[in-house]
Length: 229
Image (cartoon, rainbow, N blue to C red; front, top):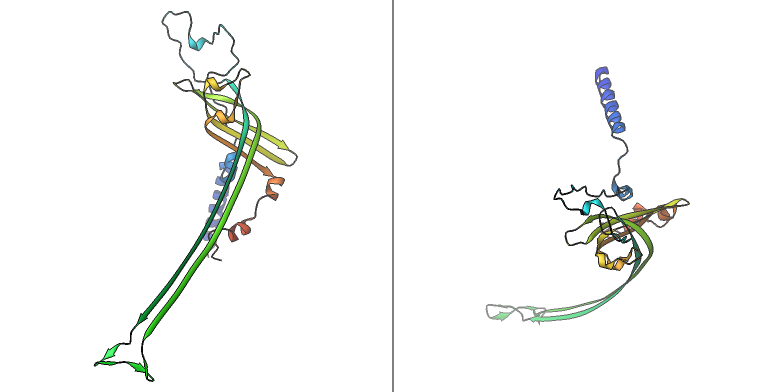
């Protein structure tokens, strides 16, 4: 390799390195869920110039109602999730096959081997016995305060929010989004999570404790579908 070729390769490598540094450390893979979600911005509406005294966009309220009812308001969701599932399956099959084929004939004479007719017999027997069971139980309690991201045409509220907790050497993330009916919101401006439609609730963590409860890549390979044994 000539000196000019080596110099050209060095320049290309330096440019690639600088390009990677300029792009900055992006969020990718599992770290995407740890990217903070920006709070929703209330929609800006233009007041109608119809000469009326009251306009909805002016925020004038004759009676103060603490319950969330428009974009940008705060709402507390009480997490009362509890699920339990049990499944059992059992299968037993058996099959027996038997077939006899007479000795073939040649020129009117049955073929024989050592004086015995050359009959053919087939016997087969197969059986299968399998069983399986699965049980799962989950429970999530607590509270999380969210923001109303949008008010739909029928009055329902689209909510979303998240809570970050940093404890010792680990981080915990609780995230929720969904649709809430105004009539399900209590006087204390709270709503149970069982009343949230299209709810998406996530509870994840990372850090020393989460790493200790996570299998390594080699262990995941031996328990994956790609392992032939």
